[in-house]
Amino acid sequence: MVSIPGFCPCECGAGARHPAGAFLLPCAAGFRKPRLMIRPILIHPDPRLKKVCEPVAELTGEVRQLAADMLETMYDAPGIGLAAPQVGVTKRLIVMDCIKDGPPEPMALVNPEILWASEDQTVYEEGCLSIPEIFNDITRPAEVRVRWTDLEGKVQERQFAGLWATCVQHEIDHLDGKLFIDYLGPLKRQMITRKMEKLKRERARAV
Ligand code: K1U
Ligand code: ZN
Image 1 (tube, rainbow, N blue to C red):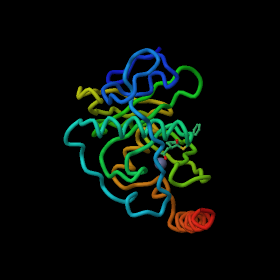
Image 2: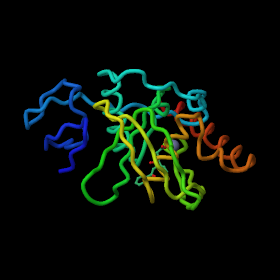
Image 3: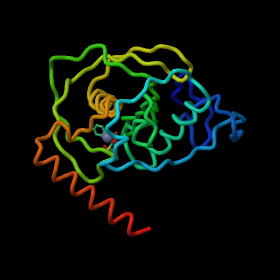
Image 4: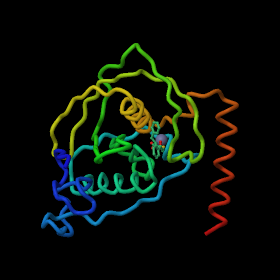
């Protein structure tokens, strides 16, 4: 069982995924866990995805609940990361879990900042839950050092490599109103935007 500061260590179904201290329902192991909500994910184009997000000023129950909901939403999608603006909250909060096989390693990063980026670059075929079914090779620094505050209010620092490094940069970009398609040429970006507008019209008609 992975134990993460700020996350409940209980072994109920949701496991280590839910943060302690958001105190709604006691789980089978007697820990109190929040009622989790899968939040709708905004689809590009949406003005909320283009905003520079505000720092989180205080770690309130509302912020912890948002982090828990974002993890639940990310696992449900499924995805390996999610940023608060993708669920319509323009605050500097991201969640990630880049473990594909093996026990989950959920992370919630409040006010994350990149302190250092390697000169070494890496290419990964990125996707985005706000731009469904579109994938493109994106070049980014292969390693980054990131500072953030965890859900217990402790300042953390870690060097990320591999998929974690790609994902944390993709998520921090979201907090600055930047999407992975912004790294592409204008024609390709416009074609993808038109596809997404069509997808949104179709989804709106289907409800
Ligand atoms: O921020 C997001 O939109 C989530 C995005 C994160 C990401 C993916 C790839 C490279 C960088 C960042 C996703 O999770 S897209 C879905 C995805 O990549 C995935 C889904 C299921 C299993 C494995 C990966
Ligand atoms: Zn994304």
